[in-house]
Length: 258
Length: 277
Image (cartoon, rainbow over all chains, first blue to last red; front, side, top):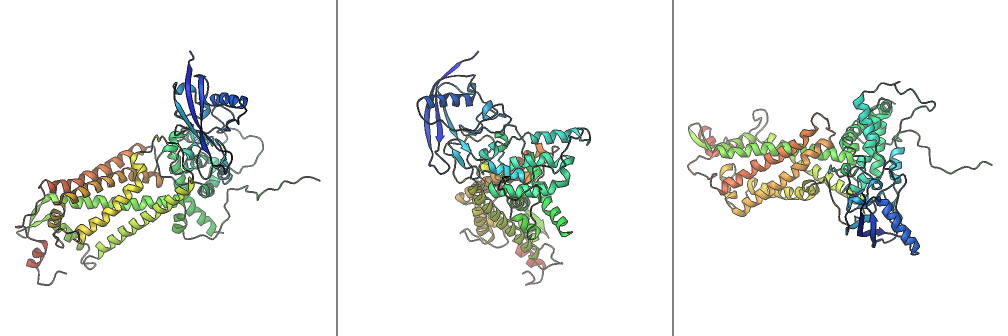
């Protein structure tokens, strides 16, 4: 049973470019099916704008099934909108009611400059992953999956953290613009596994320090975890803090042996 | 000719170029994660003090006790005990001053780290959200740490001026703790100030105590559920314990009785003249 929502008004952030002033623009959606996804609703609006010879609203999207981490949007003051544990692409109009005013803003963080309208540049996340979010291993044929035994709780924990899609909702939701949840998830999923041990502390030091070049600090509000489409727990941040402290000691020890 | 792409240096390994390193503690303090460690550790020092201070304060409810056949206020004896800590080993008040320096240092570091972190966080979002935020988890306590922190700091300064220096206008006499508490807190605005400041302290602790577990990386599925309870417990304990004193003073439960001997006279009677201080 599908219903039609009527009279939805959208207050959307428009900005011509990185240095543009930016302002809210209001658009009316006279009617829309409640089966439409949020992004489809924006597509329909864009088609109309193009027909009217106006500029389409720029927003990020790709897989539209919640696994690529491309879509963003601050919807009514919540990253990825009011639905828990989903990305914007998995949000449907049935979450809203007729007559609603929906406010849409881009992620806001100094490290995520606005490219245009609702699209931001999230490349500092790439810098953090480049700093240590990998294991250095010889490439070649895939090793047997049971070559290194891993206890089930450990692999579960690694998997929970590896679920991070790097969308940046944690930064967007954090009152401090901190990327602690992203960094700690990327770090923890390797640091709990046997394959990640040899570079564990180098990784912790390097990733945290790269993170701090761009982002704010954690004050343990927990907003990040609540906004996370993969519901990654802030337990990861505690692991990061521990590993970073240890890395400061261990790296010094190994350096002094040189 | 093969085309070559221009690219930056290869960053193929997770090794950060080893620079000249500062001493471990300074190196760690230079980072945001390190500053959070300092916040947590100095916060723990403060929490330890606040709990001990409250236990000591609650001696006011024990009233006068018999000491060498004379009635002396228990809390006055406790005050003397603090000044006499480790006395045969060290001169009088040395340990007390040592503890005071640790506390002053902790407070200064706590403020310095908080200031540094606030600056980092301001820079991290130079353009604020232009629409209203709808916070899900962040609570009043976590959002107001800066403000409750400033209130508590100003209160500490007032509190020291009030009961340690006796310079806020109430009748005051060095070492007569019970008398001073009664004199100061019998003033209704002052009693209200103490109540409000302790509630601010409780709100600060409610987030601070929970937060320090995360900052120190104390995260374990076995006790994670208890971290919030510990924060509620600590905040409630401090607020109830401390607020009970101004309330009891206003209610007349704490009422100075001038037939009770001052702790100075007690010492004077048992020892040679001039032996004390």
